[in-house]
Image (cartoon, rainbow, N blue to C red; front, side):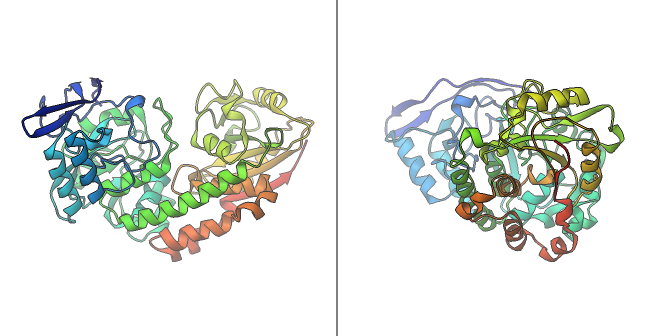
Length: 468
């Protein structure tokens, strides 16, 4: 991936004769022409210049920076061009460094676009760079839970023609179309030749994998590479805990069914507001302590264990739900996203974070669920056999990893609250099994397959107290 150095210098209103334009970027761009549509592609966007952080559609042309591109954006653009309103980051619809009548024309084309309309669209990707995608989108390749569930919500699983190897044993079961899709291999080392030969329009990695992602644009010339995944970005400076933003932008760019996406957003916002309202009722002294880990049974009872570390989506979301996530605070876990910890260090972490008044929830966060790379019964028995000592009560729990890194992440948060603060259920009215069923009924393309293959005992496993 080419790196570009861009300097955003401000917003300047220039009036010449009867034509007004807002020029707000001075750029040094090596992505193509010095000016003209798309000359900003490759530009890095500094955090201070992000679009509205509450908005979920980071697509250029979304001038008023809400969650839709519609006539209101044309109205906003015209006000910006006249100088009666300040230009926004996303007002530069054709990504040429200016806000003018050409941006109005671009937005009009975006609004009028049909499934076969040829049009280049610009957006900010999960590496916070200006990127482009060419419509129409007929086929794409993606992987992991993030790619699959985002495609379900957007109603575009029928456009998936290649998947990663992880989807082969799991999520392919949940959709008859993807069941026949060949694999492009591991996302850390994709089969570039197979992806090229597939004739896809777009490659959408399931998660950010820095080394492979840097190679992808060069290896896949002629194919758009869209870094708009809905998983955690542990390789980049700012972790992508905004799954709602990624999914909404993904749905729009991949030309999905935005009515489905907006229905998901409505559900998402309602559930999240209830979760946060419940979390606000928890006193700091009463917050449950959570430690999350992952392990391969072959490593136990001796050797190192992989822990969920600082700024993983699981850690961030747990804190949103009112949980004290040790990964966000303990020095042994807060130095990286996936620290490797031995048994003695695990004991140190427990000793340092224990509170005799509260329970410690030790959660094994595995690729179980529909993937079944791990069996939660086996892994939880493994942890229990370590013989950890504490004055606290340790509650042993297992949970499928695909929850925290996908459109299902709200279910993970509800599970935390239901388990750790059962008294809040009456306040929030949320139940993780009920909401999972709501997702299946409303956003799965083939709900009958979910009902056939989803084994809740491999999605949520509560063993209870084993030692302590």
